[in-house]
Image (cartoon, rainbow, N blue to C red; front, side, top):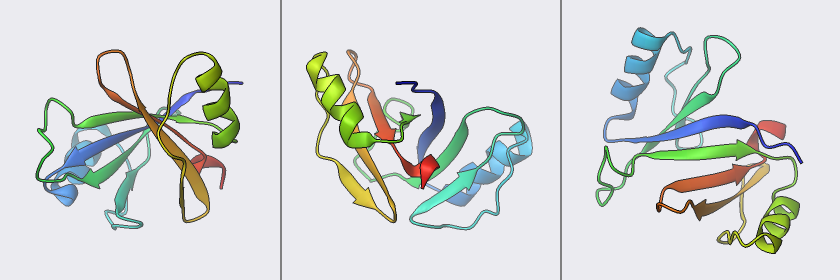
Length: 119
């Protein structure tokens, strides 16, 4: 199963300010609108997109502010295959026509698999 890196979720205190920064300085396109609790930024070429997500007060930005999201068509199948290889994901969540599940890498960084790109 292919698992391209498709999205980086960036947690921010001020979502619109962060979205404007990436659009202005790195050429991402965005409407700036908050939809499903996220501001979506599209890469200027064929690269990973960014989703700006409101950071909880408990998140220490600059240390835990990024989550790598890998696009998969079938989250449940991927989670089962990963478990067989020793990687445990949390619960599979359903949200607005897609599903996702979260895990941690060996250093405790957040990673996720999501079918959002395929909905």
